[in-house]
Length: 497
Ligand SMILES: Nc1ncnc2c1ncn2[C@@H]1O[C@H](COP(=O)(O)OP(=O)(O)OP(=O)(O)O)[C@@H](O)[C@H]1O
Ligand SMILES: [Mg+2]
Image 1: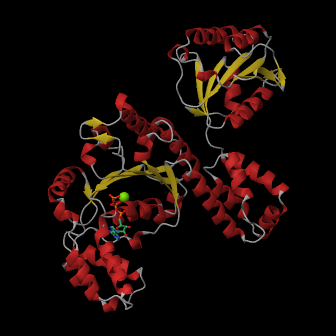
Image 2 (image 1 turned 45 degrees about the vertical axis):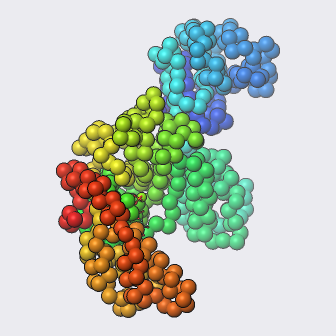
């Protein structure tokens, strides 16, 4: 579905289209864009707008007795063109209503040649079968960069502190525009209003705007903007993954990748829990200096925040508006069980289908990083060659990687590495995942703190001996995952364990 833009709308009208449907989450903005389009069509003037409470109205003047949508359409049919009709709530009535569907269909054909057009605004992409051949579908995308610039420009004129901050720091305005991408205009207005510009400098304002954006994206319930993530230096082992990243960088250049030109399609990272899949995705975003949006697939399939299709669509729109960026699809297999798709009516398979279609057709540079534990449940079409640039398998870390993971977690606690025997620690933690090593360091540090003494090698060794790693309790399962991955994926570290 293409994004609603006044010029494109006008072009379609002059080519003879009379009926439109706009899938929108922001009715006010869609109405504004349509009104702009109407103003560009000779003789059209302000549109007639129908709602189920007021009936028809034009610039505030209500047409009596038009609350019934059929009567409203009759009224519109009698008006001379050129004229635009915006129907706001009609999508609530058109399911199982053949009269209404027929009336709209008739209207589409009568309007042709009279210069009349009807645009239906609704949430969700469902259109009655009978109308599909007559209707042109639009989607209300998030604002384009130009719209953000225009709004911020307007706010700068009205708000002296924003004007002063932009005056004091050249380039700040552009940075704010970049930070604002992915927000809808009312949200952007809200986010900019809360900036404490008089107290902070430009960098602080950009950070604050990003933080506001993070909060707003989080409110969707399915997405999260991950800020402040760490690069490869926090990732122990996984030489193959790091090598892949570096190869990409040297082929295209970091500048090209972070501007989206040389950005690959994406990777699927599968493997054992706690071995650093999420960490790797964060490292990609950090190394390539791209914003990271995490999509929680279990929340998408859960459907609490709207139908899975609508949620997914919102996530794609946000990712495309923020692009270039990394879209991290966590637990891509969440809707699928060993018996097939969990949700009735094939909703999960439709969701996966629309995800694959979007991956194929996305117009903006969005790098998709999908992570999965139970990858053997994924249908073959997800794994087909060419979908992702690479499928990686993250297994249990080997001895050198475990040493590195200990080093990373001890260093992050500002401990002196010379006080620890790292090879001994690595040697004693065979079968541990990265998460279990981190947990051992964490618990040992806690014990030492409780005794009010610095953390020592002995504390770590005690914790290690008390831990029964998942690879022991779930040996069978891990063996199965490894066997699966052996044939299909590239190991993340240099050698298979
Ligand atoms: N290779 C590693 N290097 C450094 N730390 C690691 C590594 N692997 C795991 N960790 C530590 O374990 C924690 C959990 O890792 P992460 O969340 O990336 O695992 P995961 O594979 O995504 O697990 P899950 O399947 O449960 O989502 C991380 O916060 C990190 O501190
Ligand atoms: Mg994870």
